[in-house]
Length: 247
Image (cartoon, rainbow, N blue to C red; front, top):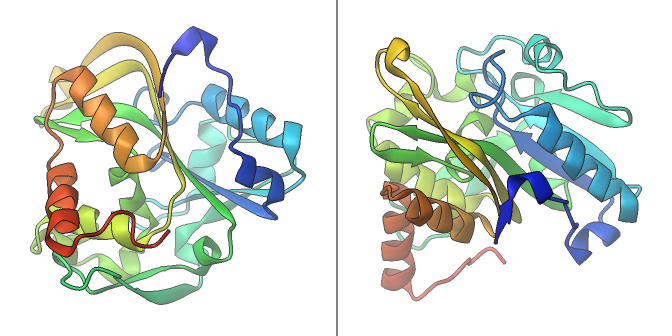
């Protein structure tokens, strides 16, 4: 669904009322404010909405590309919410999870933080960014849940995955990680270039919220961009006669 940003109120889906643990994955890998990182404002709106219907534990989980501690980044971004636990991917216990696709696109198993599996409801909250001609949206946001220690190499963060084709990796993550809700903070759209001095910001005034694939597809169409991993998800579904096979 698309909302006017100035009127957005988070109305928690009914499953949150029954959850014991709600995990929120912001995009907060760098100590740079919105529109680079998920804003404190939208996290406040989401947390306030959850608290209206649930006393569940609320967790914020994120990791940095270089494996450095995440808590200084959280502090710089003002993520100091009462009764919210902040967690660092690098300190997580990793568990190996099978990709449920009969024929994985790139990665047959992922090592992920075990707290994801022990959470009852999972939310990805991301600013609207376009890198090159592709969207960096709610499903792409799941990449930094993967440990730099496990997947990094001499070429940098997640270097072992780039050779497999990152769009394929992200499509595999969609099927493997059971995220329930995607929220794209599109008050502005950030267009990133290789030279940061050329980055552009466009006012957009919207918030997208819904099932992660549907949200990313809707946002891509609204902005007139093509997001490659969405086409790969479509192809995998068609090939195997599947929808969201982890649901």
